[in-house]
Image (cartoon, rainbow, N blue to C red):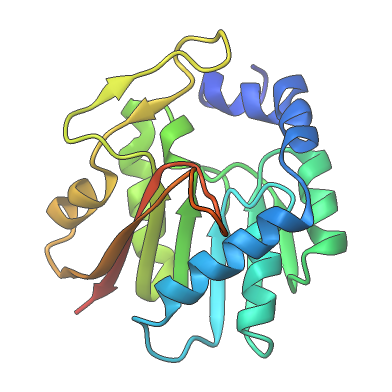
Length: 207
């Protein structure tokens, strides 16, 4: 676990993270993500810059490039192979190979988001990620994650301590009282056109 604060970081930076790349690629994902982000962004005002924390190979960034052709897109990804693929193929302007906990910037983006990332963060470190989401955003935050009203842990591909469900958006709203809920929705794995992975998204705005 050299160089990382948590077991989860080392897990995703290493061989398991490399295997995830192979299981999660393809134009179908980009199409589904484009449909999803079109729904989400329809509730927001103009966006000139977007930051994704935990971008993997850049499938979300590729979808956003179609929807926001003039926007500045930036990704942060802990797995070196995934970060290189995102930098080469997503259309992002910049991709940093770094842990969310190590990423630093002296600026903010119009929208900062995670998608399928908070569920893999060590629960005791979630507060740090919430703080990063809030600090790095100049206006909007979005989380698209597995939802559960109370925190629970689920075995993930035979591994314990690697997947957690909870009310991430609710905790963000409680932690930062100036945030307000703009919109939310559910994306279903059995959608006949644009399937996702049973995640719930929440778009929040700084007041």
